[in-house]
Image (cartoon, rainbow, N blue to C red; front, top):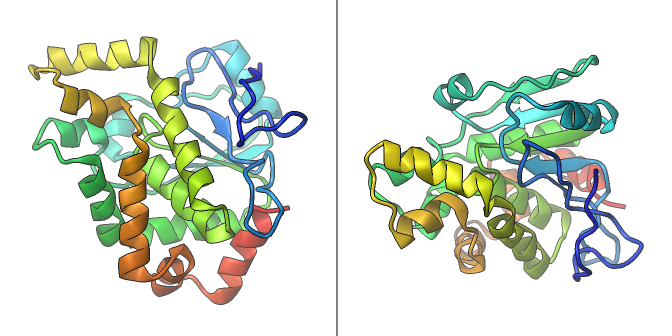
Length: 257
């Protein structure tokens, strides 16, 4: 079920097939195969990111059965989880860790239209405990982990970017991974989401469309600049917010080869 994307610096020939296309589950990809500053790469089949999995069809369920994922980190609020419950249908145990982050880009978009850089900077400043908990869970977990929110764009995007920076992935590769989301959400997912927004009485503007379904590189670049300026680095951010040196080392070891 893995689609082989065109060759890019993130996925050279013979390396990790990162983009995974499953019916009913969008924006799913393996975070393995990204370059590290020390010459290595991120570990394949260790960390995945996606939009929220709902009730999966048999092909997607079979992928989960064989994926090695034993933990799902769900960044959605209780409200979101209630309105789109996850039903994997797998026959083996998969634990879900609920670490709610913000109110979701859709809810935020209908109550003030924050810019994406403002949204991301606010997450880093206000939700450090959540980011630290995700990093700690991944450092301790020996299986594969899926991190998701609703679209797999903002909360997931900042979380994964922080993790990748902390293990030594260069910023340009981190931003390129984030930016893949725009193409992944285009089409049926975007059309369905915009229809829900219009049904709720909102007017779909260019700014709202960006907030809902686009991942412009400059948005994450602004967040990373804020991270570096205010906290020093991704590693310093995690250390300031409760991780020990040993836990950071375990995170780096678990996500790199």
